[in-house]
Image 1: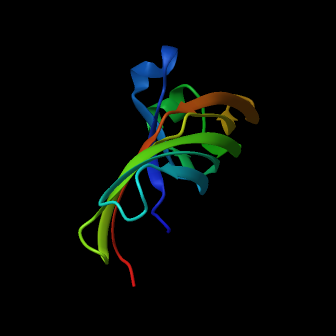
Image 2: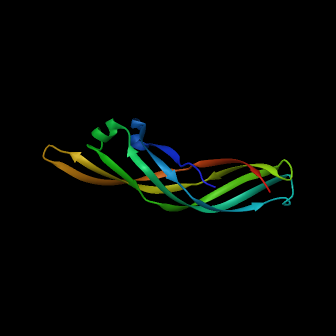
Image 3: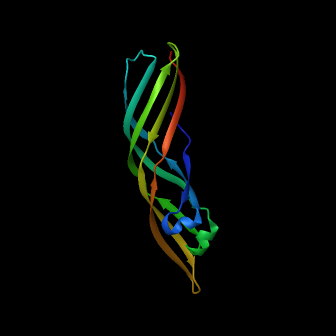
Length: 152
């Protein structure tokens, strides 16, 4: 199974909340998930619970709010993030229409927290100053999955 990475809008909190959306990033999160299915394997309806671990990293991180970048950070800023291992909690079900055709739905929750590093080429009256700072990013994505399948 493969999917398209989620794109997150990054919004400031606290003193930065006045700026709204500050940037964006794409999240990658391959997951190892263990599921426990209820009911017999031949049952029409089979709910399940799952738990696992996911490796999280981001790509295409960027500041998109020009006013924030020029007035607060004082110059062009690049962003990078750490990668981390995070828990995954999952619940779902499969429904068998007949011996071959089935459909399923699941919902997963990934509480994650990581550090973003900002490198700014700050414009000063004397010269350009390279400023490095970091901030904590907290995301609580809920991921849904729908499938239709055929058994041979």
